[in-house]
Length: 307
Image (cartoon, rainbow, N blue to C red):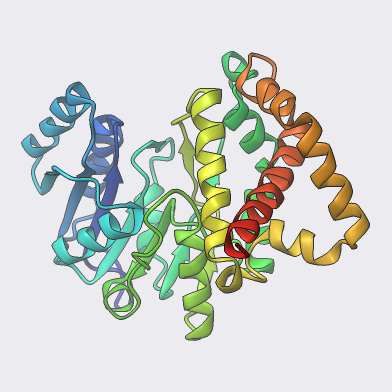
């Protein structure tokens, strides 16, 4: 019998996509909390075609935990498709999606979710201070935006601030509104899902129940992922209008400012990138580089289309 009152969550499928990352510690922490809830639960980890065989071998030990499954996909099917696959594999009416590179440091993490029966609940993310990562670009970027992750700020624009890093949702909703599998590459699969929820009047409740970000790629890899995300943004720019801060910024600028940013990137883009992939990346350069890269990519594709 559930320890929660009627109307609260009484069963749970925890779904974790992973790629080249060991998430055994995360699963063990979740498992320890789940067994105390006294409700039916399962934890399913789906590996999206990882190339790191050692990581896959380590993650396979997840199968030794009761109510836990590790599923390895031989071929990478993409960020949206692997999440839809997890939904299809699940059997309970409430789903909790977590990124595999997170860490739980709250002993009541699952309990906090189980007492909230909104159709979609976004727990948010947190990033802990780590002096050893002061020159890691992703860490610097996320830590500088730490205050924006609190629930009050996120609830001010609930759909635009929705992230799939850590959220609970009704399985029926995900069956009706699955992840958009056109978003195969890095970036914005969470943004378009937030827009879908908005268009269908599905309420999102933001709470302070964060998962701590741990997977900090090295600077070259993070810059590459950022560039990939910017290309994704351009591919779906019409759909993502009003849901992307970068697109909103560009819409509000006059042509002279846009031209200046493009010229600056054309002249100094290589130097900007050299700083970002190096040992002392600067966030103001990162901001300029993202805008300049997007504009340059848009101009390049427009030129090709006009031929």
